[in-house]
Length: 70
Image (cartoon, rainbow, N blue to C red):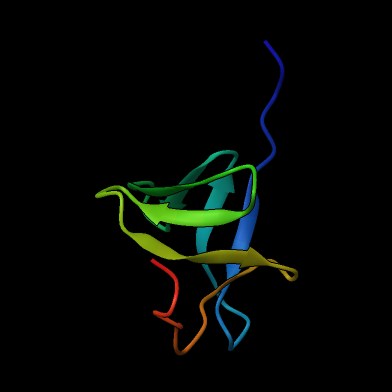
């Protein structure tokens, strides 16, 4: 069985707040909190969009969205 790489996900302050074992995201105590799509989009365990995986790695999200498109 191939080993899985654990990637820490950092806050703005530089603290590791989550861990990615692709495609699953876990919090610091090991609870499953979401997943990452191949397009680097992040969703919560409830299926809600949480942001996208940026370089660093960090979870990023736009402050505002355009609702012009259906």
